[in-house]
Image (cartoon, rainbow, N blue to C red):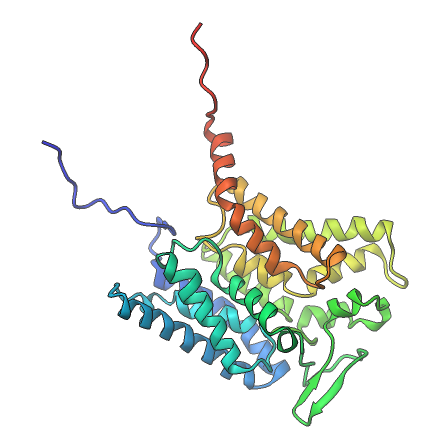
Length: 340
């Protein structure tokens, strides 16, 4: 008679051999995102907090509602939906309409996460898919960037829409349109976050602080962020050494591409997602390298000035293949030897 073992549980990733459960892990992710939220609120105003709260509430509501209708266990308390909502808010402009953000939350939670079985079964990062969907569906609103309210850099194209809203191009948009290096904000302004852009991607120092918290708590491995950021730096360094920009060195342009756009946010908080990133250490490095390569190819040679979201989505799709490759390299395998 076959024995059964009631104390064995088979479940989907993430598999954590630690005192941290999913709820505590997600709580630490929210804590790590807090510095960026504070800087963005200072730069863009209190609407950032309202937008983030709307996205969190909508994401948690959609998760609760779907599980209620489908009679599945309630997982709202694990805070994964709250993290997804926060990341969606971080990937849109501070002036983004609330109802559009709610649509993005529905896509992320219901279509990308719950329809595939919930946390641990989604094939791609829900917030990444939501951002791409919003960019394609609401291109004007997604590319109308508010400039920094408290410290506005001298950038061309800044327009006062109303006494409370000033819009202007992002640094990547200026470069994409062939602007000179002198037209860009300083690297220090970009490092601190006094530039236009999405809510959560403008302050590199705030994102680095959050990344250090996650690494300290061993929630993420530094392999993917370092490989991602390093690949962007090396690619840009080589490109601008061959095709220099007037008034800037190749190193300055390489630093620019690290600090501009969503590289820091994507590398630290989105490419490291447990479910949609490789398991093996080598796989994490390959994930980062692939994201960096696709990001720079899209930035320099494609029609979009930014490629972080697309690059992460592409690497999410090939993550199972990366895992298979790394497992084979680590443990061997292949064709069996023919009998002599």
